[in-house]
Length: 162
Image 1 (cartoon, rainbow, N blue to C red):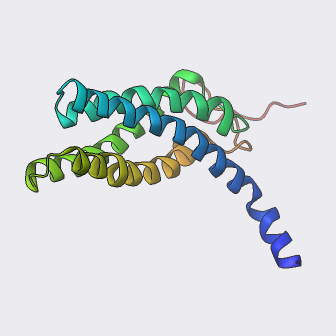
Image 2: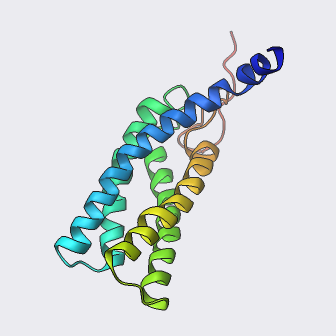
């Protein structure tokens, strides 16, 4: 029991963050899949256009959920800077998904709804999500114990003397 308690105490914060990240991601997933399928299957948008639009909308929802719920205890670099970094990293996650969709559609010539959903919403989204979880923790939602960052220089501020 001591080992389990020790492991829980050591990783509790990570488990909680991951659970919240997963909840926010689940909501964003429903939005992403719903909009991409609506655009691709309902309105005959191209597969890459459908995925790009759906990810942009889902990412906005996910940013708000992650900033104000999942990582609210972490240091804030300012909403504008976080939003910018978040979307740069989401662009990388989107690129990962688009490479999978493009490969499936244009190289393998698999163009049906099942192939699209497996490539876009299972493989591509899964790989992109793994990248985003790692990168958000590293560059967007910083640990709470870091010093505040000067918005003009981007450097850590010196501690204030008492």
